Amino acid sequence: MTLKEIVDTLGATVGLGADKLDMEVEQCFASDLMSDVLTLKDTPVLITGLCNVQTIRTCDMANLDVVIFVRGKRPTEDMVELADENGMVLICTQYSMFKTCGLLYQAGMKPLY
Image (tube, rainbow, N blue to C red; front, side, top):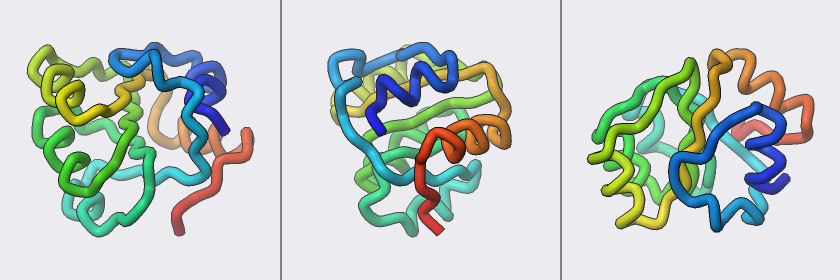
């Protein structure tokens, strides 16, 4: 599944990384617990409602490339700047985490676990 397909499926907006929407991804992980995120390996997409600079720092440490913010959360300028420095893609959707996960699963996204 491409990031463009994810954006279309979620009726989402791209806050950063619009030039990377042709990137292919197979799995994603959903969590608001950054300690759980730090246990991830080679999972490019995180779905979260936690919208702060620590989210971006944690994703950088875990080598995550894409963050999908749910519930209408929008990254701050500091978050966008840090994510840009790390080559990340930031996507925002109005849907809840539950609905976001369900829509992506229906569209063919595979869960990590």
